[in-house]
Length: 317
Ligand code: PYC
Image 1 (tube, protein in one colour):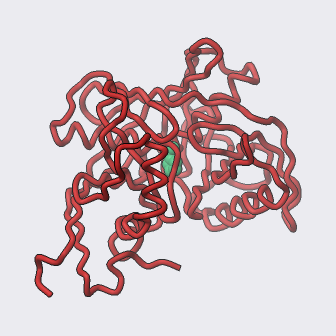
Image 2: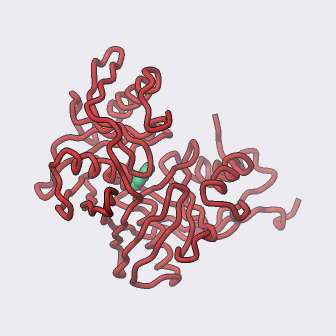
């Protein structure tokens, strides 16, 4: 076996409000020419080991979100992107989109301007002024159900909203938890139990889609913020950023409640204190969330998969 048998994958790592994104620049699988949703299905069915190799230990970590750049179907889009994590695939990813834009700018592939990015759940528009800050106009978001009660054994009832922001969320401000970084183990445990209870009690998004993100809200520390959150992602890790799709889901619910007017600013603080600034605009009946945040480049690397390495495809359960 020689070094030429090594598989090489070029990645650029960034973080958005503390939440990491690993953009695959070269060495990714050929997913064909279908829609982004079809290509995500091919990724899942035929190349899931690639996902695990890029994200899981020993080359990655549970908290990483991967972004595979693809040729877009829609020629008005600058790129297509499929997001993935330690356990599977995401619809859209807000912090990841901010990371992708800053990564493309870092490489000189884009300059200041407005761009469209295709994802498996629709097209997001991004505005980039240069530097680290990016504004996303996310896919249309909506509140599916309000005041949904879920009973969690040993913890009692939690009442929240079920909403779509590019992924499915249970949004809950009615809880007994303290949203403090020192408390993340407990918060992870509680939100994981809420997720299991939602599933057991048949509480889903539209068409029976699983609610795989749980978001708790509480008072902010930063006086300029409106709220602090803790977001549990599908792979049982918490979002270090305020979560772009979670903030989008929250904005859609605030608009529906009449608490947030179009254009009114909502500053969402994460459990580590990073902030996304959000607002909504209306496109006919559709609620389009706008999220602004900043990403920073952390590394340009080549991942190496040695065919003799027993953990080349990642450590998996
Ligand atoms: O920012 O949308 C987001 C996100 C989803 C999962 C992790 N981050």
